[in-house]
Image (cartoon, rainbow, N blue to C red; front, side, top):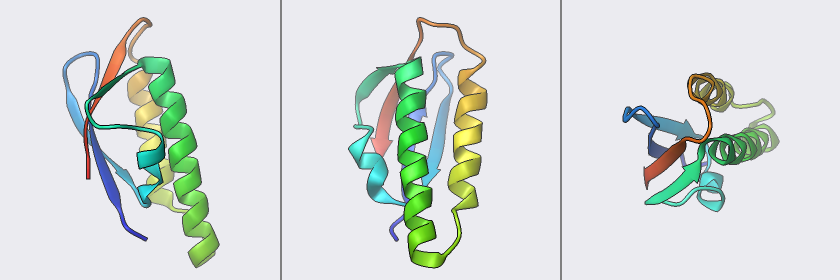
Length: 92
């Protein structure tokens, strides 16, 4: 299962490299696209849940790294108030 990393810029200007155990994240995020904060979190939640489910289907257990990444994204997002935007800088 190919790992995917996506780099985002948070509303405070900080950049972060995020992890997905699957390329499914390409279905939910696009490089160079700006997302409203709430929309970004929802997209990540769905993408990382699907990625973890794919790992479980293949290996018999969920991907704890995907679950941890989602927790980190939700924690970081909770520090901002709407309206705020997150930019997906790259996906590789």
